[in-house]
Amino acid sequence: MKILIYGLNFAPELSGAGKYTAEMAQMLADCGHEVRVVCAPPYYPDWKVANGYSMWRYRRDIIRGVRIWRAPLWVPPKPSGLKRMLHLASFALSSLPLLARQIAWRPGAVMLIAPTMACAPGALALARVTGAKAWLHVQDYEVDAAFDLGLLKSTRAARIAYGIERFVLKRFDVVSSITNQMVERAVNKGVDAAKTEFLPNWVDTRDIFPLGRVSEYRETLGIPAANTVVLYSGNMGAKQGLETLADAARALAARDDITFVFCGNGAARDDLFKRCEGLPNCRFLPLQPASSLNELLNVADIHVLPQRGDAADLVMPSKLTGMLASGGAVIAMARPGTALYEAVANNGMIVPPEDTGELADAIAVLAGDGARRAAIGAAGRRYAETMLSPLSSLLTLDTRLALLTGEAVPGPKPAAAPMTNGPILPAHVEKSEVE
Image (cartoon, rainbow, N blue to C red; front, top):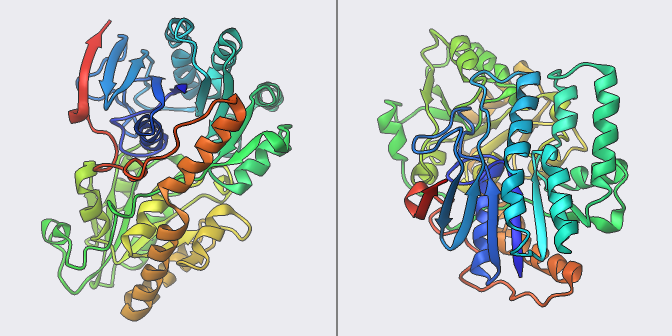
């Protein structure tokens, strides 16, 4: 089957939607589908276009047999509500000529990855012109997030934005998302339940696993062997509520047996660094390469996953899959009834969102109880092995594509389901051409 994947983020981005979109494209191609991608140059989570790519030029890549067309976009160095809207709109407009080029190819399915919904009109138009089926996969409800997190505040703008979103969502043949709660939100926005699909993110437990030895990062960071390491690794943005981590580190500063490690980049990194300034129990690292991810995750005795209360069902943190697979104990901030709560409740510890005191207390409890940490970590590992398999998601995707298009699909090959050496990296670019 010919499948066009259309989305803002793609490899070589190492976190967020780009990681999973790249792995999805690779899995589908490995299964025998002909896959093309229209995306932007890599810029996330740094909010800076990566070296070797341009903000203003079109470019073509071939990565592991997948043909990729990259459209220019404006990347604001300090994103705000209005700047983010202009940023998304710039890609939606600049990518239209690339969509037009795919008309002659005549894809059987057009898959739009959200964010960004600004690209929905182009995706729907291409599907209608070519007779393809239109599939929307929601990694993030960006309209909800923009208003609930205070990035946009106008009541009139909210009515307009939600009205447009509802109109667009109902016109896709399939709307999928990464949690059951996010699928239900699509239904509440007017999507026919029969047109929805639950397609969770995944983790290859052969790439992420307990090392069974001390991570090399402990020595690199100068952390004493007896210390309990608390790790946050991933995007540092507005939805994470990272200020609670800084406050917890400050509350536990007198404990010389607990070390906090913060790894990642993003719009909120500078603020987190300032909040932790002068604290001897904090270490900072930039986002690490995919080849080092398992080593990094294994430095953690405790993984922490903060979250703002108002973002609870807008996103499912992609970093959770690696945390669970690594075998370290997980502390997540979540409300009962949310997808994050359900994923962690039996496989970690839960504390209320934005409750610094509860978070600090939970860290202190686990720091003093190695047996409990090990038991929680083992439960998380079992959950990752049984519930977060890439093969499971691929089977769901392949089956729905067959029903949707009426085409026989090749089906997953045994060697295709696991990722190969993690996400696609720049070194795997077989060919590139600037247009």
